[in-house]
Image (cartoon, rainbow, N blue to C red):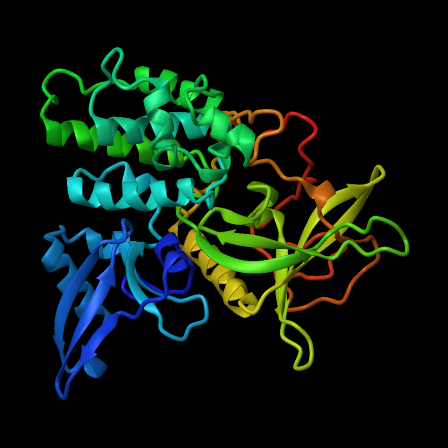
Length: 425
């Protein structure tokens, strides 16, 4: 899949409305509506739509938006619909575009489109963020929308009125009924708006020589994206699914909880839709996977990873129920292939080689961070016996039910820990 082929997902605008991207059809022409990340529409008059290729449509959009040629790699066309009945056509970030290349972008409109998409995912909590990070990102949105910070303008109380434009909705909730009404009648500002205001005050302005408005906006767009790059699921594709809840007792099953499965070039993350935090995060070298599509049962994506059960090393199987299981499995496989193709060849060993290159110290995560795995909130199948091997790929675990996994030569696997202890990425 390249940057011009259609993809499947569920970004914010499609969740807010049902809409079709073909507004009128005649004998030879059709008006195609392409939706951008900020929900604006790019209308295109297209002749002979059935014979139009995705590449030609992508080029037409770039010409209307006056985007540079690099946009061919950065953006993709997405067909999006909750039920795939009347899909809308969206111009969104390409899942396969590496984050490191974003830092090399200078075109303001490209940066703005990437910023708008990232902002939408943060505000909709599809990118779970800790409160401190939400405030830092919200402060940059304040800077873009309100201009440089001025003492006394705005105040925490005035930010309250538009808090949903800067912070995710679950951080803006104030309850219901009498207490909410009293809070709205001049009560003191809460921690959300005060924290946002403090972060807004700290936003750095453009340095000398880069003080024009356009250059300044580029600076803040890039700062927002750079902050989002710290999130392991930035730039991912989203899929709907469900997982089993841990059983409350031997006789009472836990039921299921809705989750979002986020897949990117870096790995797979299972996100709790209600709690807005990560349940499981795995890099590709930490997992094996497969999918099943029984005729009379639900489609399932299986993820296998190393863990422990009361101190005993075990293999854990997570069962994700989803109609998109086969699509997720194919995307995982393609991401792995892309990563392997882009890795530089290892230099030949030399007898006179010096000490190995230094490794970068992993970044410490906050204790209890929303990006940490919460395996204790998942119902997994734990086993230590040799399982049936499916599509052998080396290396594999000592015992593995699925051996469909990333091939790394002499690879090793580490136990994925829950979030009670301070973790490393």
